[in-house]
Length: 358
Image (cartoon, rainbow, N blue to C red; front, side, top):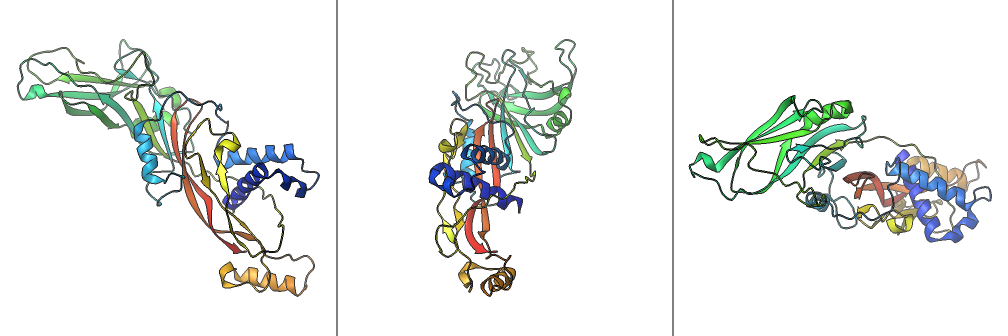
């Protein structure tokens, strides 16, 4: 019920923004400024946004991984292709904040709420190619990579906990993904334990070479480098939102039916931080539910009885049933948060796909 009420609030806001003359049909006590402000507040509740990011276009592109993920789960309008394609309903891409040290990585995870269920956390780093290595034996084609959790802020003496190890080829470059779910889950529960990651590389040759002679992409001068490291978090955040229904009136007697409604994020003022889509077709339900209710109106038994009581005037307090969405589908939105992290989130019950009398 809360989802349907929130959807109605969204629809009302868009109708007010697109057609200001509708305000003349709102009771005088509900002035335009007040109702738009209230609708915007509840719209933030629908999209689970505590504070709106600054409406400034960020000077960087989202990671290609996030773009590919969005295209996998949604079409160009943000409509979810199928349920279950996204692991969880929120995916965050957090940027490395340790700008100066080549092998240390730090991520600000303060945007993750304690009520969220951590499903998976991935550390993604781009390994650079090593062109020249002496004594080309079999083992010299490989190196050992260790990922550590740092246990405090001190670099010397260093306290650390091994998370993951693997062998990598010296002569290839590309993205390496490490599962760090357990560590990041601990950090979310207690943010004071987040001191970042350390990555070390060691050559497997019997000939001793300098440790960490293979590096991962980390640009000190260009923090918008698409190869910079990032932390990807998959979470579930199914917090239920409450919202009061704001009724709308009908202009003429037409049957209950689905009508076009395009939600334009530019019109709302959110185009500066929403990446995909630029808007989506939400649709809305409008029309009369008068007796007799045909099969096309998909009326409930209760609605049928209510329409009969209203038609026969058996009770002056009983109105006609309401024309409301009886089927809803989800959308996916990718956006920048306040820290310019890229977030992909799935929102349930955002598109009306059919209407009925209830």
